[in-house]
Image 1 (cartoon, one colour):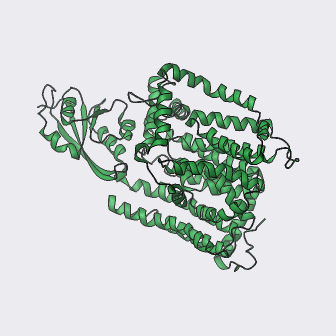
Image 2 (tube, rainbow, N blue to C red):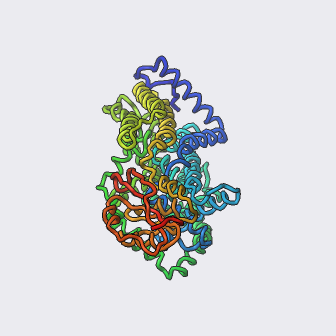
Image 3 (cartoon, one colour):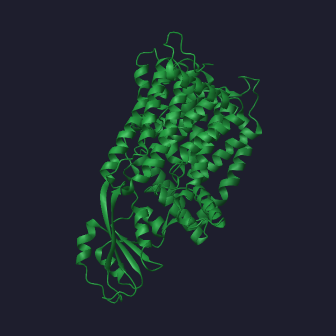
Amino acid sequence: MPVLSRPLPTARAPFGPLARLLRAADGLLATGAASHGRACALLLLLGLVAFLPGLASLQPMDRDEPRFAQASKQMLETGDLVDIRFQTEARHKKPVGIYWAQAATVATAEALGVPGARTTIGLYRLPSLIGALAAILLTYWAALAILPRRGALLAAALFGACLMLSAEARLAKTDALLTACAVASFGALARAWLGRARLERRRGPASLSTAVIFWLGLALGILIKGPMVPLFAGLAALVLSIREGSARWLLDLRPRLGLALVLLVVAPWFVAIAWKSGGAFFGEAVGKDMLGKVGGAAEKHWGPPGAYALAFFATFWPGAAFAALAIPFAWARRGEETVALLLAWIVPMWLIFEALPTKLPHYVLPLMPAVAILTVLALHRGALDPRRPGAAWVAGLVVLIPVGLTLGLSAAAWRLDGVLPLAALPFLLAACALAALALAAFRRGAGEGALVLAILASLIVSPAVFGLTQPVLQSLKLAPRLAALRNTLPCEGVRTGTLGLREPSLVFTLGTDLAMLSTAEEARDYLAAGGCRLVLVEDRFADAFAKADAIAKSGGQKQQVGRVTGFNINGGKPVGISAWAVLPGTTP
């Protein structure tokens, strides 16, 4: 197995500070690989460093995250744990798993006395944080079927450091938990494939616990995001069975027991929602949501074939450049059992995602653990050789992301808020320096050291971006600022409506009963309905609202109580919102 401080024979040996860094990285990796307990502890520490900064301070990220969180909040408000709703609209797009997880987390926080738990977005993100941490540990477990402990630790750390997992760990959505379920099933499938009787008889058939993990991953995956985990696992199993000329090896996974377990887990809710919705859930989830993404670009998320391959260099940073260098190895060794297994998990689903018109970066996240394992496997086979033509240039891509983030975030903060992320800049520059040292280590043949330094660079980027830069970008925090403005009104139980801006984050922060108004006249009548009322008017409706008739029969007079300006990420444009209120005790 390669050692960090030992370069390839014809490569230039590292010296000076780089050599000292590589020795420290080697010691860190060796310490973590000394036992499974140490490896898991180190991976958990990596995940917490990468995922915790910004978990609570990041605003609800429109549009998907507050839709999930609001639907979970409404479960707590209504006590209905079967039907899924966003305000009065049925949300029949995804199964109930993520909503149950979020509702249970918030209910526990309420029981422990956490103030304002139902409107604290960080609590709704805890299932995603747990899912991301579980995905890292399960990647380590899956990699142990293919790599020695040191390699498995490195592969899991490489996946844990990737930007896409870091983002999904902070969002109250399905994808971090889905990835944990997928990699659990992959690890079990790997053991069944590599342990089949005619190959490596010393391993023996897959154990009962392995089979349970496989089917439990499928069952929980179905409750979280429908058919996706069965599709990942089923397609890989199909490709491997065709290669083998038989599917008998799958019997090691105890399909009868497994299917019974899946039905036991998923059937109760699916039967309940079918009865309660009259079958509408399946028509919406399958007919509109899933097939709509196959037939067209859902919610304008269109992308050409190849979009995922291009985005991969950012989403899988810092491992993407090294993974690209592993492609020739994967093609040359595709006949080997371990490589065939990894390619069966990655390639078919990747091609399907590239063919679909709907493109969202997180769709390929469940494939990335296998990419990380394949990258480290190629490294340990000596395939990531800097002497190969173009290898050093490809590896140079590892520097582009931290440099781009440093420049882009500084420009965005200055343009949007007139400030610079001064607290974050030293960390961002340190990440750039570490990425450059990772490139230097690779060019000198210290492949493992290069990966470790790149992972450390990512661990600096994450707190710098989410912990130190994100709070500075106040222009993006429209919903929290509008909620704070409403809280300054001298009355309780403020009835609130919005004219123009209709983002789901407003519903989550301002309340389920937020009125979505369509015209200036509706806004006028809403204010005139009596009591303490507030209407948020986007600037494009300001003239029409100003021309609306004066309030009558309200016992009060409308008055502007504040104004918020910022940048709507979804619209991609600046917005201004004026707050108009009718307060008890005012006179016309």
